[in-house]
Length: 284
Image (cartoon, rainbow, N blue to C red):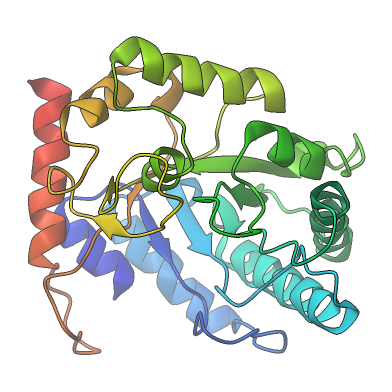
């Protein structure tokens, strides 16, 4: 149904949860027949599997200095990667979590070790599913607000496995963390070039969201594009940039619906508006 709703809204890429995002889901799996139904729906919609992104559970804290939490997060991310691989998704993205009272550099290493464990535990398939770090808004002690932190996490992955991982950028998170993507096209380009240069590769995905709170607020509160502090024009610059060519650009904007009927394939009206707006930016 997620595939059908996305296609009905006019999307050519989508993001899904493979289990409830408020649980670790370290024992949940995906049956082959369920994966087959998803693949059939994608084929009918004309959406390529590598343009599907899976978002890992919010509760995973791979940066935690507490061994019990860190090990539970490791198991949860590994199982999430297993489910994502079964779907043939392009990638599984996750929030690194909080360093708590520990040293941020040590926390970054813990995140990288967790990624390595997931990659070593799940065999590579022809689909080439990747484990992808998502940048964060930088509230409190959360990790992943800077290119340097993301680079340190990925540096823990052996060269032989490095092609199976990467990172993505959320526009609200960038703005809230103090990366000025809205001042001018040149300023935005400088931010993207800094991430690409520091991490050593371009992002594997973008989350397109306006920000409810001001620049540098460190608050992760998404808004509909054009209804927040970033505004519409920076998204025109982003979509026109070669850095977004060929990769999934995913909306994580507010819904017009309070709830969704399980067997209803109709699109969310807010998604329809947002996709029309983005299409207009591409052609206008």
